[in-house]
Image 1: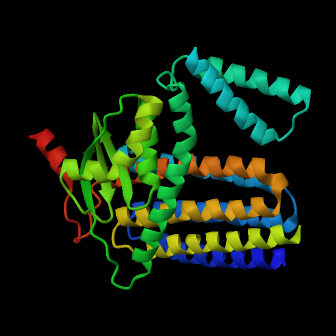
Image 2: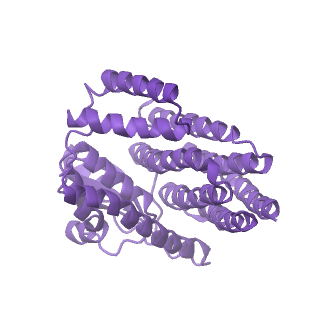
Image 3: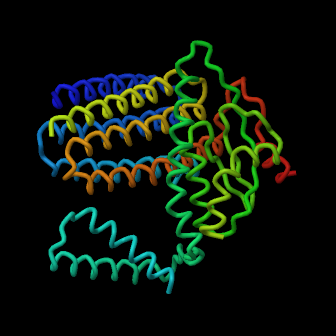
Amino acid sequence: MGNALFSIAAGIALIALVTAAYRFFRGPGAVDRVIAYDVLTIISISLIAVISYLARRVIYLDVAIVYGLLSFLGVIIVAKYLERGL
Amino acid sequence: MKNWVVSMILLFGLWLLLSADLAVPILIAGFIVVFLIVLLFSVRNPVFRDIKLGPKALAYIIIYPVVFLKALVMANFDVARRVLSPSLPIRPAIVEVRTILHSPIGRLMLANSITLTPGTLTVEIQGDSLFIHWIDASATDINGATESIVRGFEKYLEVIYG
Amino acid sequence: MQIAHIIGGIVSIVGSLFLLLGALGIVRMPDAYNRIQAGTKATTLGTLLFLAGIGIAEPGWLPKLAVLILFILFTNPVSSHVLARAAHHIGIALTSRTVADKLREHEEAARD
């Protein structure tokens, strides 16, 4: 029962991922793509967490933490690049 | 001194959450790591120098997350309504507001709180002025905008950070 | 024991609906700033609820989930602020429905 509910949640998050990916590919500007990338990352963190629940492995949560850290730095660096050309 | 103690307590709390283990060697290792980090970074960045630790401030530190979470949930439903309605009822504007907070960490918390409650987004900070993108601007003058965006948070942050 | 998994699952589904809302927001909103507004923040509450749901189902994981939640709460506003600042700095236009832009007025006044 728990697995079924979390699978539904994962499915809805996947739909959200595809919806955000539309903005990522569509653009029109670099800033819009970075925004979409930011949203994609956050949805991915949730997906990694739900995968770790479904697989019953707490160690996968560390993947989510590191992934969030790296993508945060990525967004900051791209924004800095857009603002001043690094 | 206060900066050191607060930094070390926060970092040690993070260590406890990450390791989720209370064995003595892990606690000792955590203490050493935390001490080294504070030694390296806290000297040049006294972020918690201005924090107040009186009884009232401590009470507000506990109350503030509750106030903040309430604002977060309320505002989320507001934005949900806007996104879902077909006519997209938005009235965006970038407005200027003023803050009475002086400490950098207090301003950081204020800007972050404003950004996290949907509908308002801090675009720029210059001196005492914060420039905020507001999805449904009901007032575009400084005083009206300050009253409706900043006051709710500032009341608490003023006591905590001064 | 089972009931905790069911409650957690429902909380997670509510969270995932907020994630979907955020994704829908960045598709529907007319300009970059409004996309940041709708996108980055509905997803914050969404992720919060999603992770909280997993925490209800598996209480032993709460410390790590708390780290993730705190991390998202502190980094998400910073990245949206930096993006909005960069967008305004390089002159991304606001939508035609915008009623005021005090920052541009301020910058123009400083330049004169």
